[in-house]
Structures are given as structure tokens and as C-alpha cells.
Image 1 (cartoon, rainbow, N blue to C red):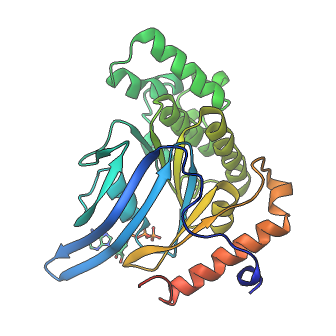
Image 2 (cartoon, protein in one colour):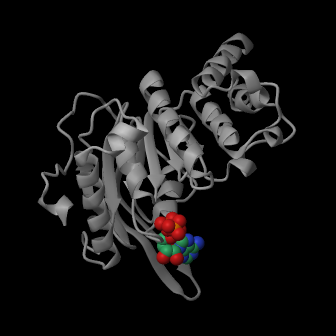
Length: 280
Ligand SMILES: Nc1ncnc2c1ncn2[C@@H]1O[C@H](COP(=O)(O)OP(=O)(O)OP(=O)(O)O)[C@@H](O)[C@H]1O
């Protein structure tokens, strides 16, 4: 395939100047039940440096949710460690925020947009003036200042997901985990939200791990794409996305390089599905 003949840069990036924000080392997860053991994740090792935007993509059922739950401290790994800012994750870390696919269920219907964004800051004991400033900045970053007094149910799906993103970034997390956050919105809204993530990432300098099953989305958004093998999962490839930093839906997606990269990722995922990638 065309992608296989192009120059594709893989392996850890040479930019080792920023400190490591998130480190996953030898992560393994085996689910045990009466009917037997299921090894969902076999041996995962990767690092995110501060300020990186990295996408994780893999075939359906390859273990993305299991991995996310281990990283978010919601599930104990069978072996290996997740380290955030040098500290081993043993429960949901304060320095991490997660945006899930189901925006409808992640917002409180009886709180306004502003109150929804403010709640985690309040719970964390942030003083009122500081909190209000952080909320205003986050609402501005996602373009929702005008809707701060609305309730989530008065907003479209895309706007609700923007509230969830504002809530996550207001918290100024060390790492922002996003689990297929745009899977439930229409294609145009999805494109707008992808651009929003790139903009917020650049403006706020947050470290982002973005999990998706959408190959084009992973290439459009990421500075790196980690391709997962079939379950039991290992990292099949760590791919550098050498597209220009300024991306837009029309220009970037029509670049020959974009096509080469997405074709390469597609071919790798096909390989993964056939069980020919990594050690699987
Ligand atoms: N609680 C559980 N008990 C047993 N096996 C499980 C459990 N949760 C997941 N699995 C198995 O682990 C493997 C990975 O599942 P996981 O949901 O993490 O994959 P995924 O990549 O998120 O899937 P999808 O692409 O469908 O969202 C699958 O084989 C699944 O059947």
C-alpha cells in the first residue's frame, strides 16, 4: 500500500526535553471470572511528555477501555504501573481529568453550564475568586461564555460536549484523557470539536491522551499516534505525525502526507485485526 512505501517515522520521539507527564510501564490486565481468564492487555509501555497530544487507536475490542480505566485509576492492573508526574496511580488521580463519550450522562441537569464547570473546582477547595476566573477562562476557550446560564438539556450534543471539555480544562489537569469523546456527535460538529481540541491544547499547553477508533481523526489530531494490536494488547507502533502544527480540516486533510499517514495507520490496523502486529 502507498503508506507502506512512504517514509514513516516510528519509535520514541527525539524531543526528550520536556519532562515525562504520564508513564505506562509493562501494563497487563487479566480479567478473572468463573468461566476463565481473559487477558485484555498484555504488555503496554509508553510515555507522554508534558504538553504532548497523543492519539491511541486500535481495532474494535482491542482493549482501549481497559487501558483507559487502568490509566484513570478506575481499574487495578494485574501487572505493571501507571505513573503520573512521578507518582504511581492507585486510584483516580487529582491531576487527571477524563472526558467520556457520553456527554449527556456526564453533566448535571440541575446545574447551569457555569455551575457544572465550577463544581470540581469547588470540590477541590479552590478559592472563589480563583475558581470564577478559571471557569470564565475555560468557557471562553470553548466559546461558551454566552451559554453560561443555560442548563445542559437546553444545549445541543456538541455544546454539551464543549461544556464537558471546559470542565476538564478548568481543572488544569496534568493529563487530559479523552475516551472517544466525539463518537456520538454528527460529522460537522465532530470536525469543529477536533479543531477546538487542537486550539485548547495549544493555548493551554495541556498534555492530552486521546483515544479513538477513527483513523483519520487520530492522524488529524495527534502529534503522535500509538497503534494498538488486537487483544491482548501491546503497542504495535508509535508513529510520529509530521504534519504542520497549524491544521485545518480542508487543507490538512487534503495534504498528500495526510493520505500517506492515514493509509499507513489503516494498513497497521488491518494487520492488527489479522493478529499480525506486535507480539499478539
Ligand atoms: N469485565 C470484563 N470481564 C471480562 N472480560 C472483559 C471485561 N471487560 C473487557 N473484557 C474483554 O477485554 C477485551 C478488551 O475489551 P475493551 O472493552 O477494553 O476493548 P475496547 O477496545 O475498548 O472495545 P471497543 O472498541 O468495543 O470499545 C475484550 O476481549 C473484552 O471482551
